[in-house]
Length: 482
Image (cartoon, rainbow, N blue to C red; front, side, top):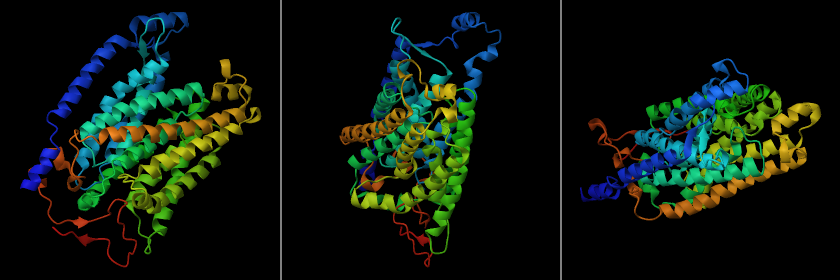
């Protein structure tokens, strides 16, 4: 009883979590009141004046009707896809989907402000104007922090996750401004600014927060039959809507159309190689649900930059083919190596789903950009695809490719350096994080139904990435000691 009481005391957040939520939400109210206004397509007076000045006669011309379907898809990915993908742990489904909900809801508000200050601040009025595209970009910004959460799943408190989101959104806005505005990179699906940054940000935080005695919670660091099924629902939502994610803010017309096609083909190709490598890795050819849930999505990440470009349909399939292999090998060999040698505990394996595919996607985009020619795109197409106007109108394609590669490096640097700094902040013993032997357990922060209060001996199934038994001559199922 004394030991159990110490667990509960250590995760006491009755003061800290309400304080952070109330104070930060009140701050959002004040900052939105000072800075945020509707843009000309969402303001009643502004829209009527816009229609007159642009000789528009129908409300259907409003950008809302073009962007909202993509916004819906992205929104579902953020709250349902990411949330349910994290429900694989046998005793941490409430935390996986619930804390995802919390940090996304805070993050999108803070993102509207941070991205607005960098991209939409009117120097005359000092106001930020927001519309439907702003909401999409805010969701993208949240995705970086949700990816980072994947590496920390089950090991941190909700208060720590709010801090991760506060700094994650801030760092994201800065690196996004450098990559997209100063370097003038093309990255509509965020292979660089979202996945590479978010992946390395989460990995760096996890490295700083290394728990040498995390094996004390080993019995809960795994899945059961139904938890893997819920996680697969999240994976399927992400897989289906990823073409929308990559194309949501691309150019009207051929650009968006092409992005959907390229992402769709790459994802399909990735599934087959994921199944192939997963089966090959076991002596009896049995499939591992960890690989199917995660590695099958890697192509969507890797196509985040190049999908908008003329990579060709077979080029997209090649990228997907390679990503399924690379990501599945990462879950089989790289994640255990990182934990053993670099003391890097990555609960969801974001290194294999986001960090490495995002980095590869950034460099693939650089190569495709560097080899772009007027013969392939046409003169107008080249200008439109790479936005070669104003001070960038004389930029050559080889130079553009160099900046694309540099942008990938900036995303990695911001993720690693920012993650290390935030990790040290989170090491202060004031956040109510769980003890080493109380991780991966919803009981630390949630009221649970009575029939879930105790854990009877259960069948250990599909321990997520760690301590995998590759010798399938013995059963994968073993009775836990109570």
